[in-house]
Length: 263
Image 1: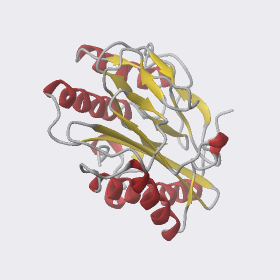
Image 2 (image 1 turned 90 degrees about the vertical axis):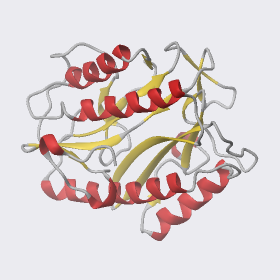
Image 3 (image 1 turned 90 degrees about the horizontal axis):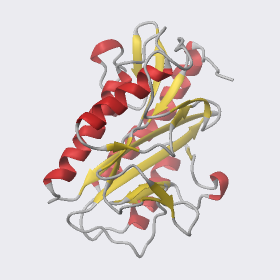
Image 4 (image 1 turned 120 degrees about the horizontal axis):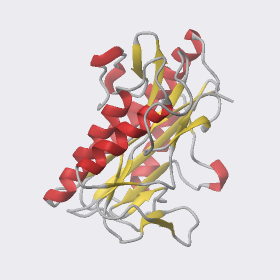
């Protein structure tokens, strides 16, 4: 069942997502050679709690950490470790969720540790652009398939592939709600978008083939060909004025066609 939120509930979700945005951006600034993924996770949990929120991922279905940190060929759900140090040439996917006042926020981005190869830079750019294009479809009356098609079309035109095993989702009083938001599909199909819906839109894009597999830890998804993968995500509310990016940086509340999506 798809739940549409009231104006007050959207404001509550924005508060949760602003903690997400703050901690996401602070973690991104700490990504450098020599830092361990465990150190980033410890920082994120402390900051979320300092800001009044609860880590949404820690303990969720048994996940052991606050952040999902996915490096290079890891697509999503990487587990942080004090033994894993970042190095030049890595790309670091940071996925972060927060619960505040009974509502959830969720966002992700992928950060390079320079220098990275030119094709990896293009992968990151194309994935970020696909997210922006998907958000641009978030108007009342359009359909989930319009979002999905926008991602797939842009990614494949750029020469990359979209992950099909993992999808975006609705979000609200639960971390994962209806509807599912695939990153592939046909325009004009799927659930119709209505004011008050909140969607976690998250393109996951591979440099090589689309295939993924889950490692023995039961969480970390990697590309089958072990080529790099990128992941960007925002929580987006559907409003009469257009998309409202709840997880945009610096308290941005831009709506409509000039939204601040990439922060």
